[in-house]
Length: 176
Image 1 (tube, rainbow, N blue to C red):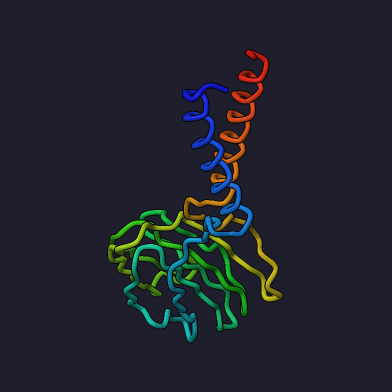
Image 2: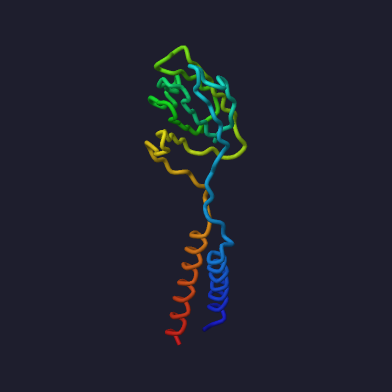
């Protein structure tokens, strides 16, 4: 192998080894779920409590119907709608944009509430809506977003560099 070939192959092999070891030992971080805080709104005595709530972008609000009558939590701008919630049922929504979201119970329009969403310093999560039954069985499933990450990318780059180094070595040996 010529000196020029060694100057190319050797650094590629070292970089490939470092990437493969870091991926195998977990030094490259895997994807991490992006999550905000969770806030509770109780529906009780034909009222939302608290009626006014301030949250950050990426936070989730969960409404729980503690009344014997069915209720909804329906945004005036259509951003979210719980559908009918019977006693004990919950509905959760993750807010992804800043703003003021006024909502009502469509069955009892005198029931009103407001969620004020303030900009958060971190990247916002994708919207999720997950109504559940009293038994905790979800009516819909939405995946939790994840931050970009790590181990598979490092592994892929390491394997690519290792393969390229191997091909250059084979080519150099055949050229002799």
